[in-house]
Image (cartoon, rainbow, N blue to C red; front, side):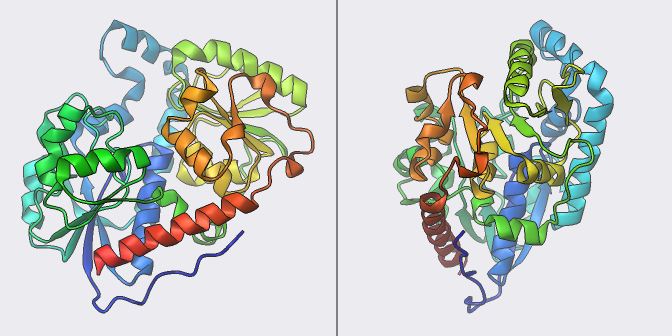
Length: 394
């Protein structure tokens, strides 16, 4: 794997940086992208504080996910999570332990947008970080007033404003026009999906740089150096990892297919399905629902292979050089248009998309994938993205 030289110690000025993003969602990609953004900016010589903005809706969604009270269908789905409530509570504790240990969070917690006005002059640069923080349909923002997006649009800040890899995801053109004036106040804009760059440029009138997801700013060696990874005692010596965001409605069928996959390849499957955690107790499947961010990284690192429908599951599999398959219930052609498909095309791994578990072949997995071209593509992406951050912060 190519090792990128750090872009650091080049700043003429040591800046005080305020970073706001989804740092406390009980979601692996959210927390790990926040950590990677903070780490990269710190490596450049700046002093970074992550603003502890946790609106009540976000806390309610993640802390009480198995009883959301959002209607009959949702409540019936939530009931299926009650048998694993203990595992979910352990998972929450693992997330909070990782956040408190690894992320430099400010001393005060903010729940209402207006409260951040007290930070107006606290920083030299305000950074609106990655994830779907400008997507009104994200879990944190969909059921609340638009004003709860204002902190991510940096409306509270009197200093220079930049974004790093912020994603509007499924926002419509009309919705994007609503946030256009706020984005026009930024001195530097970037997005992690190429498809978003043009849309954000159109509504803001500013150039939007295409950058990589923050989790790719660190290569596998840097992840392991910063977060020592130990193999979990809850999984067998050899296993496949299935990491998915599937909902309870699909889970029964998928779990049945995973048992068949396990028997076919001769390996147990560690199942990590945070939104459908009631995994059948059987020899073929091991429920690892309690995994926090550190445990998630360990599960990927030590797996014989990874099957996932997750964007960040895909990114970490590539970064850690794991044999992987990206599972979709749609067509392979449709998958190429998703954010997973876009990154797979950039690193020349579009052939890793599967529509059926029968396509998973674990024979001689160490020889399945040649990562040389992917490493070259990732090194180029990292270098370009770090250069954007360095220039924007300086």
